[in-house]
Length: 260
Image (cartoon, rainbow, N blue to C red; front, side, top):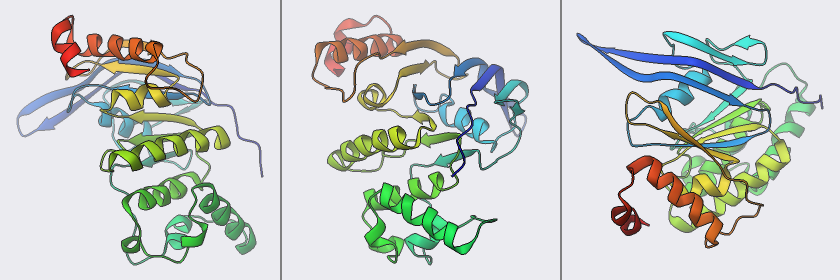
């Protein structure tokens, strides 16, 4: 298998507007961010601030008015297999098996190479025994694993995750967070996670990007710097959590302490 290229993601002065009837609504305002190859970053912010729009711009699913979004030497203006995206709902094709869902969109290789690639990614997400199952036969967590395998099988440079565990129960969510780390350590893709769960953001990310309310600007970048695996009960973990709460909600200490 070919070596993965080393390509950084660079965002400079990115702004994005939506035109709704006669109104122009600015969603992203002067976003600049450098993401090094192989980093795992988390993005948090208030609901509706523009976090998902930022991911969709990076994925090439949304246009933008001003700024630069570049992966390596390539300006991002459309979708491509160098970027994969996982949504909150798995979006598997219901009449296809898990194997065929993962295989969907794979071209330009021999049947043997394709089979080996699909099976290796099903093994990676723990679904090799369920290759012939249909989406309706899977639990929510298993369906998300299949969606992760489908995104990874193209070996993207950047894996974009938009609240991928948000609809899952708490125990399944924690399990998939741990599996996401295993996949990241195995694949060494750059990963960008949008989440409302601050604990999840700290547990997974090398650093946490805190966004303002709409139009979204970067309010703060909080380095995590804790060794993995991370203990959510440790004082240094909770200190980072407090910093992010304060950045999101201001110096309302009594309210923050109640929320914590």
